Image (cartoon, rainbow, N blue to C red; front, side, top):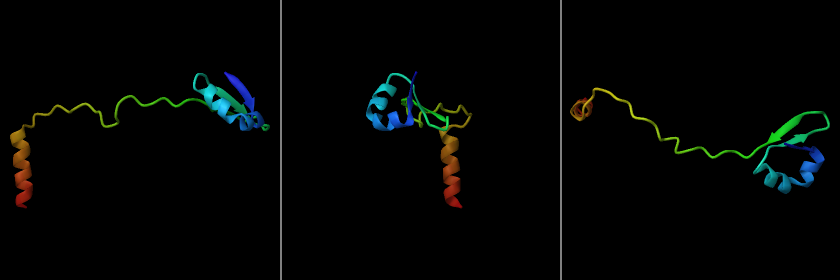
Amino acid sequence: MRVFTYSEARQNLSKLLTLAQTEDVCIRRKDGSVFLLRKQQKPKGSPFDIKGVKTGVTTKDILQAVRESRER
């Protein structure tokens, strides 16, 4: 992990972003606070990919419920 001062980071932002592709980069301010620059990992799959829920409900039951709701 490489550490850069705030001034160095400002002057070499492009270099830091390239470096952060392969390793973590720390940026340190004069007041001592430290920030970590890291490449964000892409999420695997879609957030809509979810497992189904097993129930005892049949297609017939669902159609009956839909018909009943339409009659109201």
